[in-house]
Image (cartoon, rainbow, N blue to C red; front, side, top):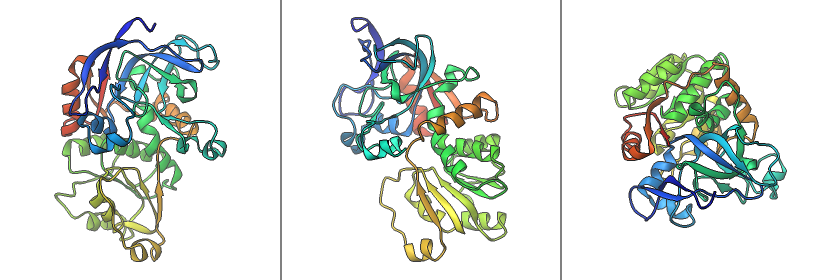
Length: 348
């Protein structure tokens, strides 16, 4: 299919924006799968690529380049060595492409592979009509999940790990940042029986979505003191689990003021600056556990996320506020950048 052309959003130059181009449909290698894209969602890292921030130069190997890593579609062709997938299978992409050879891969941690490729970051992604991906980085969707929602399993997996990793049933949890990651944290916490579920954001529209996803209490840090409110909601103890998903350095520092003694703080967001912390008083003396998460466990996280949506335990529809065609990609990224929407989905 290499001689056939397809539409794709391409980063052509080291500058703001993308370009809608016609490029050759890629050919799958021996252990690769060619996927016809049905839906692709915009992630925070895609916004960085769109703006071309300094971070991009350390990730993208060369231009032109096709971004996008939250994608779902149908298998259009397979390489000669592929056995797990067949033409017509409904699939979703995993961002982390493990090497299968390093210590991490050999000890059950392929998501932190030392030689990891990153779909949509170090290799071409899914903002196109077709993409190729190794068969080791592809998930077959359950029948109960539409292709339009299949692209959400990837972002759902990270906060899901935090909620399932913590002992949240019947306990308090605070979710900092109500972007898509935070929204899935709220929804998963609801399923797991956490209470109270406190959602924090300065965007009132996103707080309203968090309430629909299951948050019992909403806090806008610009309108009320966070620590005092959370202490009041938890009998003066603080939140047993805090999930920091905003990427704000200030919000991460503040979280240590309202996590409970002996509680757990999961860091999922990526602050754009260093976070200075008095480890003795904020961590050691209070026995606070800090756990950083990067990506999904392959494939345990996917199994859980797939089941939660396929069974109807979590309804992701409130999170998807906008859907745009590729031709309207500029409007899509504007909605994502300004916070006018929550999860933005692109369709070919």
